[in-house]
Amino acid sequence: MRILVTGGAGFIGSAVCRFLVNEGGHTVLNVDKLTYAGNLQSLVSIDNSPNYHFAQVDVCDQAAVMRLFAEFQPEGVMHLAAESHVDRSITGARVFVDTNVLGTLSMLEAARHYYGGLPAEARAGFRFLHVSTDEVYGSLGDTALFTEETPYDPSSPYSASKAAADHLASAWHRTYGLPVVISNCSNNYGPFHFPEKLIPLVILNAMHGKPLPVYGTGANVRDWLFVEDHARALFLVMTQGRLGEKYNIGGRNERRNIEVVETICETLDHLMPKLEPHRSLIAFVADRPGHDHRYAIDATKLETELGWRARENFATGIEKTVRWYLDNEWWWRPLREKVYSGERLGLAVPKA
Image 1 (cartoon, one colour):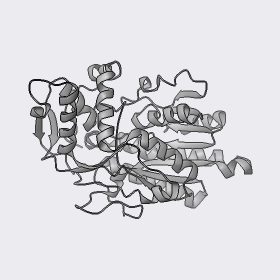
Image 2 (image 1 turned 180 degrees about the horizontal axis):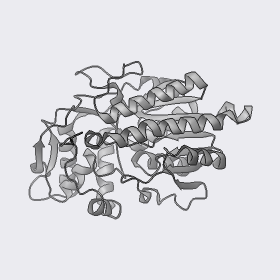
Image 3 (image 1 turned 60 degrees about the vertical axis):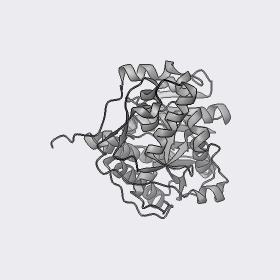
Image 4 (image 1 turned 90 degrees about the vertical axis):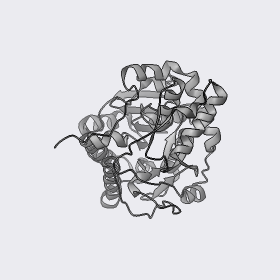
């Protein structure tokens, strides 16, 4: 299958590209602008594969995207390109609207024009997967779960931009008949995760004896999904999901943030023991503005309709992740030295 993947140099996108090429044998065109979080080093294992191709293109450039459709002739699209860090959206919302909303509009329009020109047999097999987040649903209480019917209630500029993109994708299916499916996932973690996010930040800070920042009291709850499990799910949703439907993807691994940090500390105590336990580095800091209390996904629809199950639980996945960062300094050190050194983001809101 010929698959166009946007944002394929990012964390989840690179996992998708590696899965498609290494395990599926598919032909992949990775389309990525290469912003600060895009890293081609995450794709070195497939870079020389004859069925992997890369194009440095901004998804907001609709003319360039349309040329790629015409040249590559994809049978499926997996649209992951997005600005994704909530803290950065608090101090710089416009780029989130540009990429996540207008970039999605550009992709949908390019796909619509391409799809309209396909012969009937090719049209029957074409799919457009829009990849989104559980953050569009807002914050949960202590017991409920997000389902595909949960009303949207985004809290941050990031989640608002993704909610808008979801609505566009759904509208392009209903209005134009574009064969769209939408996925909404819980928090991902695993190898090649950019170090501004909680888990890689804590791992790297702990390795170097630096403070481990925990927002508020650490009571916020997230449902954690190993990124390779997510990549498998996304391919299933694109190829087998019902058109016009949404599928929630979650690992059924709810943890309070403080529990996540403590688990990483305990894992590092075992793998690289020091005189003081790593949890002594934990430092509680001012909470993020608009910080949602809890996210938790009900993945029943995906599990029952498509037969997907997560292979990793949090214990196995976090140990694999910590070991990967210990063993792959070649990947993260240039990022820590030249791109993001671990400073706090999302505190100050600039004047209008």
